[in-house]
Image (cartoon, rainbow, N blue to C red; front, side, top):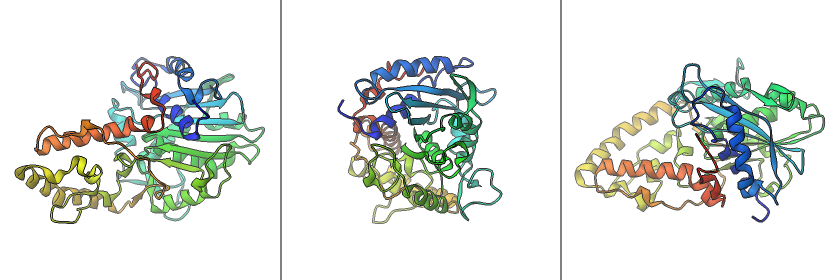
Length: 374
């Protein structure tokens, strides 16, 4: 591979965070570390002759007490050529862990003050979902192994900042939501930074919404002030690079207007218009369309009303999106509503998980023999 972009490098770390997610034995950290170490030389952006990286903290794993599957994982790597460069990678949702979905994805009706634990929000009105707050608290409490023992992330970072470092936080899906939020916390709270001059950036992939409009405005303004790390695409105008595919519906989640009723003679919902003529719900059979219209006119507005007060928005909302390619798994088998809904879910799953490595040219991340999950 020619000189890799920062997006390709961070995508590699974000997807390697899924290594070992299906392991159910206690204390899976050493096995996961082995999977990561085995994967890195096989992923071109982070393998020789490009700069190589080494895990220097973690991986740290959190599993809800009594649960079978892991809920969270995070690790830190250091560039072995330029040792001032570090990356924090945060795993996305473990699809097999029910409590992970419930606690860190769907708990969005209640909101918490920003920053976490504050009696009142700073700035005024800035709030994040309870799901995001729970996820952050888990990350803060995790302890990962280092060359000198076990430490929390904040304590570890403090040991690395005798000189200024360049720290990029990354993750995919839930990890994308948490990485942007953790990066904001690290940027505004420099208790971990001995020098006070370290640079914090983030590259998030497919992240759902973390907070409301006041939180988003604060995050955007904080990251737009720079400074930028080495090899950064300064044309972005921010050191928070929120990478989203135009065919990925997950980043649209919890934005009330995406579930509102559309306009026109055959009304639908903006969320379900994502795939345009490739998956057009208005082309169903008459009976199916009548049922669909009932959902559009009654259920969707009800759900939208339930999340309107929270006013969820996306960070860096105006950023250009990656151009997705429609995958034919989303082709309905017939003109029934069930067939269309199954096709929508299948397409959404593909675009959320597989499209990013394909678009960014790191398809090794889709190879289960490289990113081993069990």
